[in-house]
Length: 64
Image 1 (cartoon, rainbow, N blue to C red):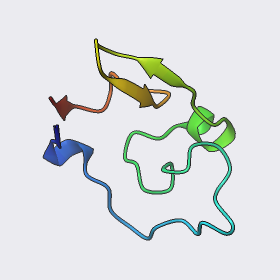
Image 2: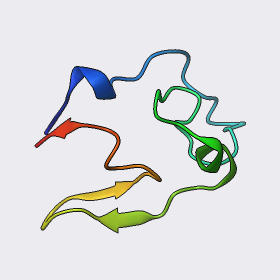
Image 3: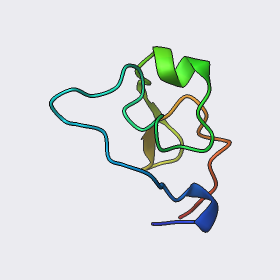
Image 4: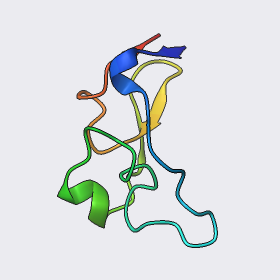
């Protein structure tokens, strides 16, 4: 699967030795909210073979 342009990440990669709180991608995600900064998302199933760890998977367009 390919990410659409809207779902691309920019900015600096978080440090693996000192990762940010919550979702590890919230510092680079345009769709991040307060829950993303506070809580690590759990994997949820969004299709027969498609799992995501995101608080807002419906907000991030992805081409499958």
